[in-house]
Amino acid sequence: MNEMKTQELITFIRDEVAVMDGEVASDTDLLLSGLVDSLGVIRITQWIEDELEVDVPPGDVTLENFQTVDRIVEYLSGRNAA
Image 1 (cartoon, helix red, strand yellow):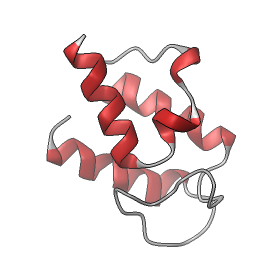
Image 2 (cartoon, helix red, strand yellow; image 1 turned 30 degrees about the horizontal axis):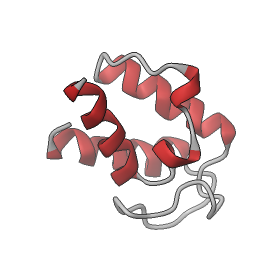
Image 3 (cartoon, rainbow, N blue to C red; image 1 turned 180 degrees about the vertical axis):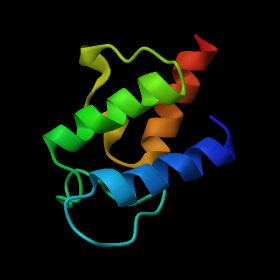
């Protein structure tokens, strides 16, 4: 995932998904901080599938893969390498 798409994901989370105001950086804990709720995770997954044309199996939607934008990018990089 290139830097432009990473920034687009951060903007999407901040503007469309976050349930509270706050700075969203690539290392911001999205889930344990409460910034993103379960519906938000679904919306992020849908954004990835629509914008990046990457299928995200339900079993891959885990805290490990979706806790931060950095982890999402790492997860997607791993999917692209496979």
